[in-house]
Length: 552
Image (tube, rainbow, N blue to C red; front, side):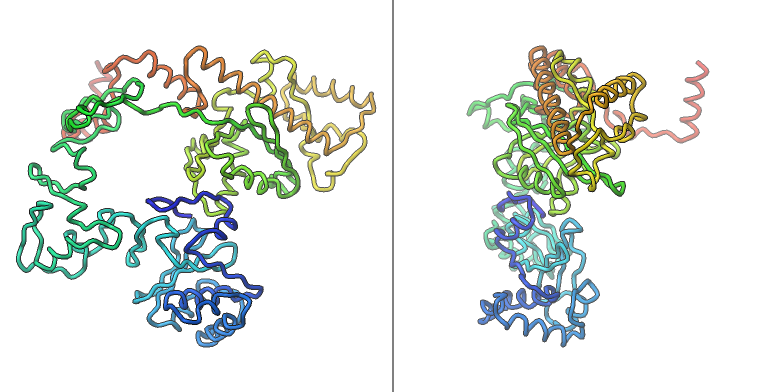
């Protein structure tokens, strides 16, 4: 679901639950295949303030069904499910109205918009079903929406739409006689343009109250940013200072504690002594999880998930709906401000989370390295996912020995035996091939066969459900205890929590260096085009210089 602006953000990830409580969306509840026509009828009645709207919107009555049948007949569309071709036919039958379709499957991007018309109807398509969007600002969590460019915005200054006059934000604004406004220091095209730029646009401020032209550099800025306006200067995102871009020498900055300004400093617009606040640690709760999956047809489908918090409290999800049940629990307010950790999240567990989010119309913030997911963040819940493998680059079986937790030991499990027909298996040990011994190292394979022979000699009874649960619980317990030990050791030595604001061991070490050892103005940040990008050389000149460098 689109996010942003000053409206209320989406605080529920599960789409069905969200649509139920979301204002601005009317759910169409039907048992036939006429949800598209029903949605159009309801949207039209709502927009036209039809006196029979309450009777039309209720699914229990017959009026909605009757009007839907009428719409199908007038548009020449056979009764049944509808796609974009059918929507286009409905559009033809509704002159004066513009139909718009926004699908969840396209991450809520507009995929169809009819010819421009005075009235606009918006349909939300998800899971082969149509609902009605009665308020686009509410749907986008914005205060305003432009039906022309189909974009939401909060402030009129954030919406420079197409051929609108940049002074009064209206169409067809000719130059008649320039008139100066002493409040915003701008010239307006006419008396009408002057009056329009003074008018408030609903809850939004007028352009005059929102913008002002600097008398010194003639640049138009928002009044909200006037305090930070420095003529001829820009704010360097690295130095956090106002500098002249043509001669600024930028350096990598040490990480400092946040500085509290005094009242006198707050009034000084040219105060350049601003502390760097990048990479500030924001310690969150940690949870650790792992999936076990069936792969009957080559596709990995989770059928068990174990998750533990820092104290070792545990929740278990099992069965064919493991992924959805785990994610529905995870994306609840009780788990807000939590960082979830999985081993090899970047190449395995992360894709199950990503599938669920896309299925529910959520676009997370992702940091990737190639096709691998280093970090996944859901800002709506302030939930973050990281990969322990990025900090401790070794297999999970090596964790206990590495951190001196010798009482822990990763066991063996027949992953290839995890099939639908074996879920209730109780009997002799599965064949060794199901443990994938060919995928083990030479030493590990020898240890495995020794262990496997011992189990067979003991005539060990293999209970699949008990074994898979025990194996997954052991993996998560090893992950949790060793990661917490790693964090404690790292913090004792460096005073940095590696899981709080870093994604890899390299970024954690970089933060330690910047926080503890880096001296100011010692490591330059070279501009992408060098310090003198205006001094360009021809290809032949560069080849000549390269030849001279090689020769000498």
